[in-house]
Amino acid sequence: MQTLALNSRSLADLWALGKPKVVSLIVFCAAVGAAMAQPQWHDLPQLTLALVGIGLIAMGAAAMNCLFERDKDANMRRTQARPLVRGVVGTREAAVYAGALTLGGTWLLLVFANPLATWLTLATCFGYAVVYTRWLKPATPQNIVIGGAAGAMPPILGWAAASGHVTAEATVLFLIIYTWTPPHFWALALYRKLDYAKAGLPMLPNTHGNEFTRLSILLYTFVLAAVTLIPFALSCSGWLYLAAALWLNGGFITRAWQLNRNYSDEAARALFFFSIRYLSWLFGALLVDRLATLFLF
Ligand code: HEM
Ligand SMILES: CC(C)=CCC/C(C)=C/CC/C(C)=C/COP(=O)(O)OP(=O)(O)O
Image (cartoon, rainbow, N blue to C red; front, side, top):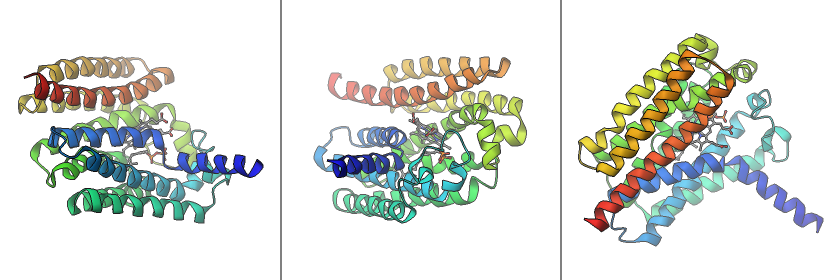
C-alpha cells in the first residue's frame, strides 16, 4: 500500500517536472497551427499522435530546464518547491526522464508526422533547454526577447506536422506568440523582482527598473495588437477572429496602460494571468473562425 502511495507521489513529481500547464497551452497552439494548415483533418488519429510527440518533447525540454536551473530555483520562492529542489527527484532520474520524453516524442513525430516537423521540434527543444536556459537567461535582460523564438514555435511545429511544410501564414502565428512573450513574462518578472535578484538573474525590472519595464510591456502590447491583425489582413481568418482579436487587444492594452500609470504587484500579477487567457482565447478564436468558415460557408 505504502509503495503504491510512494509511486503515485513520484509520478506526480515527474509530471510536475515537465511543466504540464505551460505545455498544455503549447500543444493547443500547435494544434491550432495544424488545424489552420489542414482544416479537413485527413487523418485525425495520426495528427493527434504527432501533437502528443510535440508535447512530450516540450515536457522533456521543461524537465531539462528544471535540471539545469535547480540551484537557481532553490533561491526563488516561486520555484523552491520544485521536485529537484526538494530532492524528491534525483538529477540522474530527471536526466533519464527528460531523455526518455524527448526520444519518445521524436519517435512519434518520425512515425506519425515527417522529418521537417521532427527536426524543427528538436531544434526548439535545444533552443529552450540550452540556448535560452543555459546561455541567454543568465547573460542578458533581453533573454526572453531572443529566447522567446523557441516558445513561439508551437504553431509552426503543428503546421509542419500536418502539412510537411511551413508557410508565411504559419510564420504570422509564430510572430503573434513572439510579440506576446515579453508582456507575458515581464508582468511576472515585475512582481517576482526579489526572486530574480536572489537568483542573480538579470531580468528587465532588475537591470532597467520597474518604470522602464512597464513602458516596454505597454509598447509590446501595441506591436502585438498590430501583429494579431495580420491573419485578417491576409484573409487567413475572418470577421469572427477579428472581433475576438479587437476585444482581447483592448483588454490587454487597457491593463498594460493602467499598470504603466499606477504600479501594484496585484495589477502586475493580474496582467500576467490575463496574458495566459489572452493567448488561449486568441488561438481559440483562430480555430473557431477556421472551423466556421469550413463548415458554415
Ligand atoms: C521564453 C518564453 C517564455 C517565458 C520566459 C515564460 C515564462 C513563464 C514563467 C516564469 C511562468 C511561471 C511558471 C511557474 O510559476 O511555474 C510562466 C507561466 C505560464 N506560461 Fe509562460 N513563458 C514563456 C513562454 C510561454 C509560452 C510560449 C506559452 C504557451 C504557448 C506559455 C504559457 C504559460 C502558461 C499557461 C503559464 C501558467 C502556468 C501555471 O499556471 O502554472 N509561456 N511562463
Ligand atoms: C519542443 C518545444 C515545443 C519546446 C517548448 C519549450 C518550452 C517548454 C517553452 C515554454 C517557455 C517556458 C516554460 C518558459 C518558462 O520560463 P523559465 O524557464 O525562465 O521559467 P522558470 O523560472 O519557471 O523555470
